[in-house]
Each structure stands twice: as C-alpha cells, then as structure tokens.
Amino acid sequence: MVKTSFWSPSGTPISGAAFIQQLYGDLPAFLGSEEKLREIWSLPSTRKKLLNELEEKGYSGEQLDDLKRAIRAEGCDIYDVLSYVAYHKDCVPRLERATQAKIMLMDYDAKQQAFLNFVLDQYVKEGVKELDDKNLSELLKLKYNAIADAKEALGDIQGIRENFIGFQEYLYQESVA
Image 1 (cartoon, helix red, strand yellow):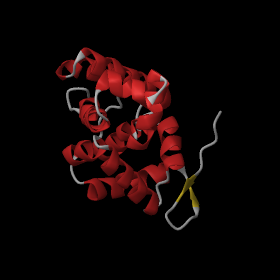
Image 2 (cartoon, one colour; image 1 turned 30 degrees about the vertical axis):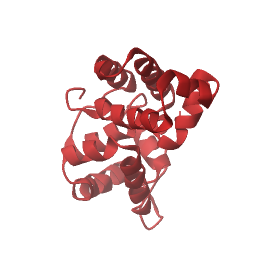
Image 3 (cartoon, rainbow, N blue to C red; image 1 turned 120 degrees about the vertical axis):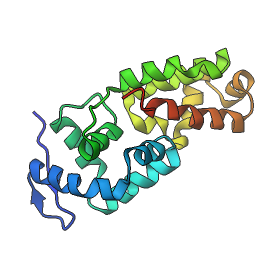
Image 4 (spheres, one colour; image 1 turned 90 degrees about the vertical axis):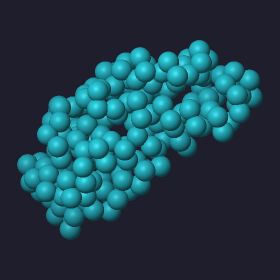
C-alpha cells in the first residue's frame, strides 16, 4: 500500500482528512466557478499556471496525486480531483474522457484525427502531463519519427500546435462529466 503524506502550507504534517478539509476551504475561492476551472484546465498554459499557483499555496503535484489515490481516482485527471473537492463532482476516468473527446473530433481531417487520437491514447496511459504543449514535438516524433514527416502529414507547425491545444477543450466539456 502506498503511504500518503500531506503537509500544511507552513510545512507541518497533517492528516489526509485535514488536507482535504483545507483544500475544500481553499479551492472554491481560489478557482472561482466550476466553469472557470474547466476553462483554465482546457488550455495547457493556464493549466500549468494553475498548478504552479496551487503549489505556491502548499498543494504540490505529489500531494494532489496522493489525494487522487486516497479518493480512489487513480485513473482520473487532477482536474477531477479538484472538481470533486471543490464542486462535489464525480471523477471521470481518463479513458472515458478520451473516448468522449474522440467522438467530438469530427472537425478535424482524417490525418489530424489520427494524430489527436494518438495524443488521447498517450493521455490515457500517462496522464495530463502528456497534454502539455512542451511535449508536442516529442509526441510528433513518437508518432511520425521526425518533425518533417509530421509536417508532411499534418501541415505547418503553427496549425499542428493550434489543433493540439484546441482539441483539449473536448476533454473537459461538461457533457463528459
């Protein structure tokens, strides 16, 4: 069994229940509305900023991962943990989110869909960090072996980046939850 450790913002050890209570009190004020959380989480840049701000307030990624285990949401996204604690929403497994997002990818041509479905598969296996825009070039190399081959299949890098960032909103639409 994995041992979980929770810490207060002042660095003293606290119980998991105390951590959740503290997070429960802080999150709604910190995040605003559920819609605002969804909006923030749908873009890699604002998601990264939120995670950095949470860390500055004493909620590290490791602690949020521990909390994910504590609430039995291992196959879910940190978004679900935040939504569960702040807004009492059920956690949605990454596989379910990805499957729903795949259904919505009809706005993209077949080659773009193939790449975005590949990205979704990586997300299901590895988690939300795969959706960080700094990982785009590695994902392209993993799928196409070379950036030049990716550009030949998908078009220019700017368009690829826009599609990579733009499709992420489908993962967090309310209909998924």
